[in-house]
Image (tube, rainbow, N blue to C red):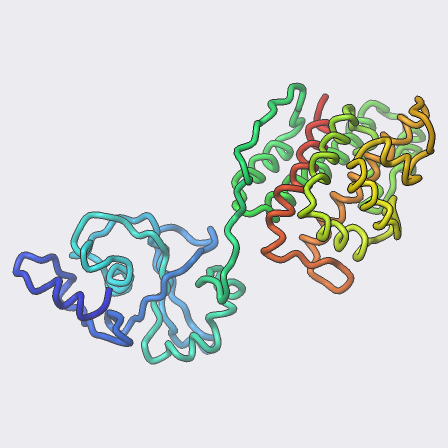
Length: 366
């Protein structure tokens, strides 16, 4: 609400008014209350209690302003303190002044005499030092919804064996963005590896030699442990292969696949320097056993039991590598990795997350 609108709203004698001890003035056509300028926030971390006022100071303990976590709190104009009144007058329109409602955002109230300094020196980095975010400096893509409402397949036999598994699964649901959701789902694979090791050690009882042999047989490298977990626990390879065929059929993902899995490829890639052959397979037959054989990824020739086994191993190895590469690209923003950006959200959601969920459905199947 502009300051002029506020003045017009309070002309009627019966109009609701803030505490008369508060000083309300105009600054850049915005209502400031006791010299506090309101800045609406896009998001605030759950570090802080709700309906709280947190003082914001610089490194010399000089006041900058106040953060109020007011989102969802009901309006109470006549009893609001200065920061809440400033936020309220920023929140409501002229037509909704004085009507019941609640805050739709949290707010930072900055002292007018430090507003220019705040915008120049502190605003862009507030997510780091303050745990809150003002909003994009350029358009940011929202979490992507599926292109069409999918059919959800309820799978039997999936067991979450520990409270840690259940917590990780729950956290994957409440994450609003595909990147964070993928990492929580990936955590379930890590927990599954650890849980399997513990169960095997328990089964050996006091057999220290057997325990030593068991531990020596496990790989120390993260990708090797992931691959071993998928190889050992996956009990439905055809469903994984079908998922790969589905997600690889979408040509929109091919460029990103090339960048993440080939251009920024690492050791462990079952198809090193074979993007051209892989793309030829996708364009000719799709991700199929016959296509893999035609490109020499598995033994050529007619379909045999040995070829079936080779294709199953190829499917699991490739899936493990892709899942690991996406996880690394999300978790590590550094030279040598494909650095994920907001425009990659849809790829992670529609390609990588679909594959990871299908793998988890088999790995956690007991």
